Length: 346
Image (cartoon, rainbow, N blue to C red; front, side, top):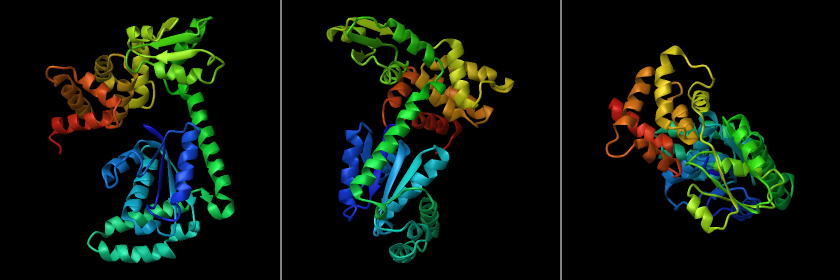
C-alpha cells in the first residue's frame, strides 16, 4: 500500500474544517495520509480512485450533502469494492447525518437520489451501485459526531489507526519470508557504532529491517539506508550492514505464499513456478507482485505472462517492473499490460 489513509469528504461542505483538522492530526502522528484534493489534482477522478486502491484505510466523512456529489459516491463505491477484493478497511464518520439515513438513503440522501435517477435514467446500474455501497457503509461501525466533541473524536480516530498500524508492523514478519534471520543478523551487528548504514539490492528487506528496528531500543543510533555503499560513506557511517538476499528456498516459499496462498505447489505448476522465481531473481517485491497477479490464473495465463516478461527487447523487463514497484502505477499494471498483449486483450 502506498498510503496509510485516504481521507475524503464533500468539497466545500460544512465538514471541511473537521476534515482538515483530522488530516493534520493524522500526519502529525506519522500516519501517511492523502486527501481527495491533496497531492492529487482536482478533477483527476482516475488518480483519486487509484489512491483509494493504494490506501490501507479509507476514511469517509459523511455529511448531509455527501450524496449530491457523484464523485463522492464513486469514491465510496470504489472503497466498498476494495474492501472485498484488496482488504482495505472503511472508517465512516457520520458528521451531521444518522447512519440510518446513509443506510436507507432517506432525508437529504433521498432527495439527492431522486435527482440522480433522473440524470442517470439510462444508466441505472450506476445508481444501484451507489445505493448498495451506501447501504454497506451505513451498516459499518464508525464515529458519530453527535456522540462527542470533534477534538475528542479526532483524537480517538488517530490513536485507533496508529495502534492498528503498529500492530500490523509488529506482526509483519509472519507474512515476509526470511525476515527474522535478517533482523537478528542486524541486531547482532550492532556495537558502539553511532552511525550505521544498511545496504542491499532493491527490495531486499532494508526498509523492513529499519521498520522493525524502530520498535527496539536501538534508535539512539543514526540508521541510513541506501543500495549505494559509496553514498553511505559520504554520510560518514561507522559501519555498513549488507542485507543478504533471499535464498532460493526462501524465494520459492515467498512466491508460493502469494501465488497459491500456501507453501505446497501442485505438480502442474511446479516448473512454471520455478521459472517465475528464477526470473524474479530473489527480489521480494517482484516475487510478491508476480505471485499475487498469478494467483487463481490458469496454466495458459501463467505461460503467456512469463513469455511476455522474457520477450522484452533490449532490457530485462524485470528492471522495468522494479521501477514500477517504486511508483504509484504499481507492478500489476505492467503485468496486466503484458497479459493483454499476450492474449490479445484490450
